Image (cartoon, rainbow, N blue to C red; front, side):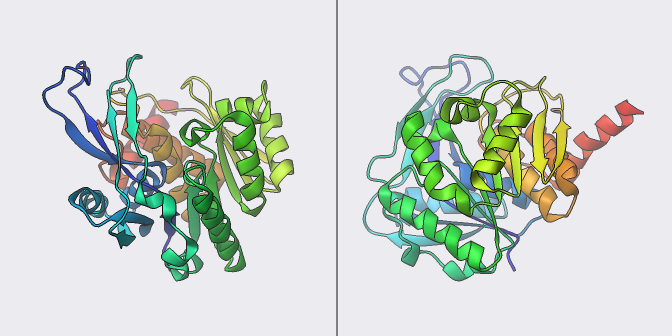
Length: 317
């Protein structure tokens, strides 16, 4: 049984050196990133057997994406096609405000992915399936494919985890809410950023009532509300239990992929039966490690994440 299967796109991102602008840079570093692929890498870093499923063009760019994920320990199940292209983006990186992303994803092969393209047996045999809102928002085809995946996973008692990722959908609040309403009744674990809850569901103020509202709306087993500000704790609601876990303080070199690192860490902790609070703590520590790393993904080991957790334990004594 595979511990975690994720399904979605991955983008080949080109970044100028920090402090340089896209229009004047003479060199660019290449990174691979995407909500589902980033989550897979974080989970693999923490020792899970993680697989990423997608559809890519049989080109050097498509093969570069797969090679990058495999180097990070992620197994890949890719449908290769002669049509469509790989998603790319040009990204100005850094922790300071003012960075920007110029996406180039039109006619990407992934947008044509159907359920028949994917190894549904891998979904049935997985402990957890993860998809983000960025994937079904790409096309009507992917919306229906995502709905099928969630249904297949539910029939097989595979845990279904979903991250709203409203900012990555490219949709307005009303269309995003319609998309979530189409899918989230078939989700067990819902992860939503506080800003998403406010923008899409008009849930502002205290995040605990917001989490209760979302759990009632979609009948989810677990709801996690993440916070953009590090001085505000992440909140997890499981059954009638409420947990709050503060962020870990680390140096910030790159904010790209920090949220995805949290999700991967949280799912890894949940897989190990750490309980909701333990899973939230694992997610927060993984996110802290990611902030110290340039690029979209966590590079390191479970020992690095454990070191961040242990530093807090020692300081709390």
